[in-house]
Length: 349
Figure (cartoon, rainbow, N blue to C red):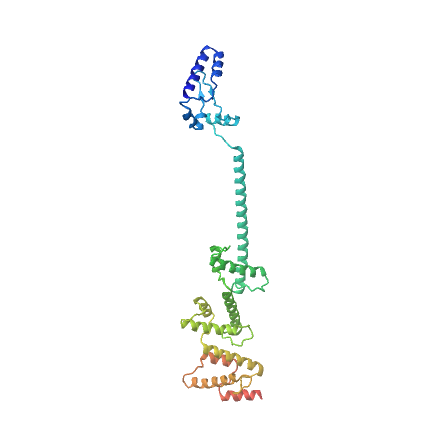
């Protein structure tokens, strides 16, 4: 094969020196690209790779480039790209560039849309928070009942508790730490138990405004279940002191202390009987409760006990009757002595 190449080159050189006719004759005698069946080189030729058969040859005299039959022909596009590359210019893919521009525009549009949406939601949240602040100013707490005039505010409050619960569970939630801090700052109740406690505490404050004390009788009918709730607060404080499970927290105790809550069971029992005495006077016009009062036997016994404790106090003996209790009984016109009893009885006649 190689000897054939040399012969072709020699013939071509001779042809170029003698004229074009000689060149053509040389080309016919040994066509370019033909394989020489030389027994000595046939095995070597068969084992050569396509890269050997696809090599191009450049003639030394003319500098023309001849391509062997197995080399692919150059296309106008590839020639243009080759010439551009050889000239040192940058090759740009117009369609790809346009696609990238459109993609960037879409991404920017989506980002802007998401930003506007976040701004709108944040503005709406702040508006509802402002309404909740107004509610607390008017009512003293953040426990908005479902039957409130502005039902949207009640639903929003419930949604904040839900989102906070999801966040604590590690689930997807739209409540941020900034929002949590804002709600904590105004005393927000995060769960139903806290909300119920806040509601009863609000009722207790109203009760004190009406009656001047926080010793709500167990059978109080003015505020539903308030008497039972008050009793439960005392029980949970006792459990806490004994180191047992309790719903009483330092924050709750501090709130109750701030309104002079009666923690003592005996004190609470005294005020409950006092409330019954008020009801008796309202019905009968006096405080002369019979010792064996059928409608409320405990009240008759309690009234008798107050007179006895009053005598002991005046004798300088230990007594459960305090100066404060005496003043409260005197407001009702309580008869402490037999003389007072006689006066009240004579007045009734």
